[in-house]
Length: 166
Ligand SMILES: [Zn+2]
Image (tube, rainbow, N blue to C red):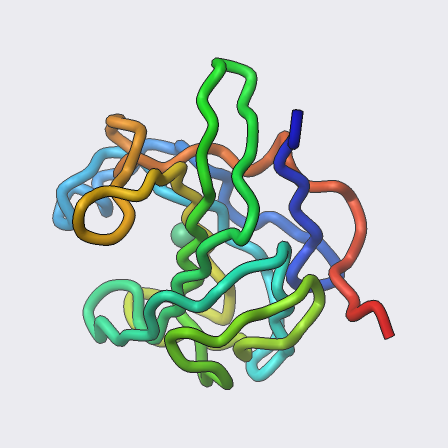
């Protein structure tokens, strides 16, 4: 059994909007519930890798997620419902990204800096976790739900701030 264990990417850990809350806002993006968790941070604050991963995508959606990075877990995890899957975290509203697709990150390595790009009223990082499985073309979502196929990361935080080993 390899249970998902996520380090806090920013400190202190302050949730400003939990996963799964329903809001009219998300309908324009095609889903009904908050598809991630919002963590408070300061403009320009370091954001650290919450697990060992590879950067799969860096992009920018000025009307939505703003500057964002997708991180794919190196490990495959066992979930309580019997699913074995890798995890993809999309981190949004960044002010700056210091990695490119293909960059490998160990826990605690800085990959981006906090901001409020895209649809955001103030600095925060929106983290959207998905369970994914390798398909014929890249990775595909496993879950189908009205929070854009994401899951609640809350039970998986290990209560420790991500720091580099050295
Ligand atoms: Zn959010």
